[in-house]
Structures are given as C-alpha cells and as structure tokens.
Amino acid sequence: MIECADLTKTFRGTIRALDAMSLGAKRGEVIGIAGPNGAGKSTLIALLLGYLHPTSGSVTLGGLPPRRYVEHQRVGYVSELIAVPPRWRVDEALERLSILTGVTNAEARSQIAALLAQLGLEEHRTKQVRELSKGNLQRLGLAQALLGDPDVIILDEPTHGLDPVWMLKFRAVMRDLRRPDRTMLIASHDLAELSALTDRVYIIDHGRVVRSVDTRSTAPGSREYRLTLAAGAEIVPSVFPAARPVGPEGSFELPAIDLATLNTGLAELLKGGAQLTSVAPTESLLEYHFRDAVDKVGA
Amino acid sequence: MRRYARWQLQDYVIGPGGITIALVVLMAWFTSRTAVIQSGTGPPRPPSLDWLVQLVGLLGSIYATSGLVSEDRTRGYYRFFFAKPVDPVRFYLQAFVLRGLVLVAVGALISGLGALIAHPVPLVGAVTYMAIMYLFAGGVTVCQSTVWRFAWVGSLVLYLVSIPTAQLASPDAPIGPVWRALWRVLHLVLPPFSLQSILGSVLTSAPPWGDLVGAIVWSVGYGLLGLVCGALVIRGVEWAR
Image 1 (tube, rainbow over the protein chains, first blue to last red):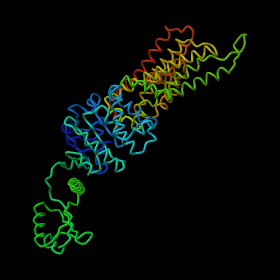
Image 2 (image 1 turned 30 degrees about the horizontal axis):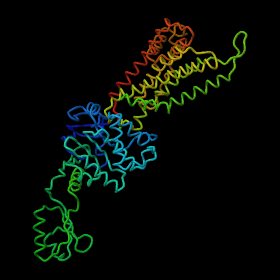
Image 3 (image 1 turned 90 degrees about the vertical axis):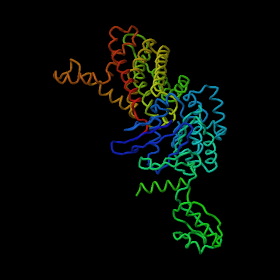
Image 4 (image 1 turned 135 degrees about the horizontal axis):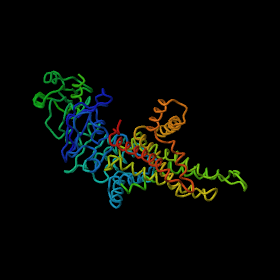
C-alpha cells in the first residue's frame, strides 16, 4: 500500500534529507517511523502526501503516485503542526474539512458528532481554533484526519503536546483504528507508543533506514538487564563477571547478554542461595534497537 | 467541492471583499458630498463614479487575489486541505471565480450608487469593466501568489513599470528606433496595464465596442495566461519547504 524504493530527497542540491530510503507497508499493517530530530521523518511524510517531489527513487500509495492517490482516495493525516485558520470554530473546521473529504452532509453530521464526543471536544465545539490549547488542537487534528473513514492514515507526532491522560486515550483511539483494509503510518519520538501501536518500526537516521524492528516479535536479542536481589548479592560478580552494581545495594546492571546466558546465570544464582526480586530489561526492545542503530550510525 | 463554495465565498466576504465593499460605500458617500461645477450652466453636482469603478477594478482585483494561494502555503493550511481528495487547481480556480463574481457585483453596486448620488454609471459598462479588469489584474496577481506572498507588491510594481514603458514604446516617444524597438518588446512582455485608459471607455453610455475588441482580448488573454501559468505552478510546486 505504501512503497518507497531508493527514495532520495535533496534540498538546494546539497542537503540530503532522504538518502535511498526503502520501506513499505501492506494493507492492514501499522508501521512506525522513529528517528532523531532531522532524521527525515517529516520529509518522508511530505513525500508520501505529494507535498514534495522525490529527487530520485519512487514513492507510491496504492500503486499510484502520491498526489493521484490523495486526490482520488481518502487519506487521514495529522501533521506535527496543526495549521487551521485561527478564526474558524471547531465545528466549522470539521464541517469544512468533511466537505473537502467528500462525505455527504448527513454523514458529516453524524461523523462530526461522534468524533467530537470520542475526542472530548464537545465542550469546545463553538470555540475558535485560536482559543484551543495545544492538546485540544491536537485532538482537532486527529478528528479531522478520521473524517470519511480513510483507508490510509498518516500520523506525524500524534500525541505531541497531549497530557498523560489524553495521551493514553489517544493511544486507545489509535489502537481501535487498526483494521484489515487500512494502512497506518505513525511517526513519533515516543518509542513506547510505537511499541504499543505498530507491527514494525523503521528506525531512520541521516535519511536512511538503519534498522527495521518487528515490534510483534518476542525473540529477544542480546540485551542489557537490571537484576535486583534481596539476598546473595555477593555471588553475582562470580556468576556475571561483567555485572556492575547500581543504585541501592543488591541492584546490578548486566551488559548485553543473550537469553540463554542470562538463564544459566540466574539458575546458578538461585542454586547459590540468592533471592531474586526482579529481572527486567533496562530498556524496551525498540529502545534497545533504536539506541544501538543510532549509535552505530554515529560511530 | 462545489459544496465548499459557500465557505470560500464567506472567507472572501468577511475578509478582503468586505473591506472592498465598505471602502466603496465610503468613497461613494464622500463623492456625494463633493460638489463640482459642470461646464456650462446648471447647479453643482457630485462627480461621476467612473473613477471608482476603475480604481476598484484595478486595486480590488489585486487585493482579492494577492493572498489566494500564498496564504495557504505560508501558513501551512495546505497540509490539511490537500491531504483531502481535493485538486488544488480546482480549489483555487473556484475561489478565483467566486471572488470575481463578488467584484462584478461590486461593479453593479457602484453603478447603482452612481445613479443615486451622481451621474449614473452604465450597469453593463461597470460590470463588463470589472470582469475584464478582474480577469486581467486578478490573473496576473494570482499567478504571482503561487510563488510568493507579496503578489500585490509585484502587481503594483508591474503597473508602475508598464505605464512608462507603454509611453516609451509609442511612435511619438522622442527616442531612437532601436530603443523604441526594445521598449516595444518590453511593452509586449509586460502586463498591459496601460490599456486601462482605453478600457475606461467601456464605462461610457455608448462604448465603441469595435475599437475595444483588441484591448479586451489582449487584457483578458494576458490574465488567462497568468491563470494557466499559476495552475502549472500549483501542479508542479513543492508545497512543503
């Protein structure tokens, strides 16, 4: 559904924002895009919507050039910057954008009412956009993206500026958006959000895909762990020579080890009389891959 | 898309269009307070509103179209508009036509006001003049609006440059034939704002239509060329920066 092949975008002839980037998303998939600031996330999205033209390579939506797809199908898009004329009222903005989406008046009325309720905007419906807080503006952005029940949804930093309560509610809404005939792309700095919502995350840096992480995979690679013991801390160095004590007594960080080595060591600790309180990865799988991939590019 | 017309109309009427209408009414009122003594005998009367039709035809058209595309680009509104199934060329063409219809209605308004307070301005003449000037000046301005924010500045500069250029290109200009040929080339390239004075005769009670055809075709054609260029820029332009 979304296909980028060797996609390159250069600005002013020298600034290479995207460098032979290749990625894809099938119908029914939710993919994530993660990367440091300036990695090329917004450029990629602008190319997907046809707001920029590739310098070389190709980008297609549903097999069509982006503008041809966007102008004839329904795409839901939330931009990082919610730019809506400030004097528009919330309900007016949704009515206008529903007309542009091509939904009938009757459909628009019911969809707008449902979205205002779902996203907690009912009490703000008669407010002008300029009166909205950052969080409410973000909710308006999501509401307009969902008008017309689009088959492709592109979300650029969708929870940016939301308070924790609405961040969780947003995630629930986005989770419910998943369906077999819909493709979603979420660009975010929030790795926990991407882990929770996506099937696969493309980690990009300096305009390139530096790693693709299957977030549904449970197969752990070599990872760092934090180990906390109520008793037997003195035998840890003999079992895990590279362990370094951290924080309160009985807490250790184990440098990257595979699961088999970890389990063998833990068995030894238990046999030696240690009492484990907790064993947990120091970072999520995605965080690990993100740090590792970006560090390698930096090196 | 056609359903969006009422919103585009509203955007214009509560913005530049409303200001244009308010200024027209204000200037007509000021004119009604101005008494001029006509040649010959008879009581003093307010002057005709022909000048107002010509002024609004030029400046109103430029004002109506200056930010038509550039405002959405610079403020980023295009992000949501054109993520919808909307053809940007049709979107702006519809807005352009609607604004033109309002300005033509303003021409009719001036004609009506003229009949009330001073010499009547022929309705057909006022409406025709406004339509020609809108297609011409509006077309030139909206083309510039696709590439920069200050399209109105560009149009005013072109106006100020094209008038002396037309004079220097005329056979009566006291310059050599080589320079005249160069000015003539420039005159042909620049928007024909100098034709405004010829087109002003549309506002007379019996316009010499036969003599005006060339000026009308040249002006409208130039404006339509501007519209086509603007459409090509919209199609080819990178909206994001």
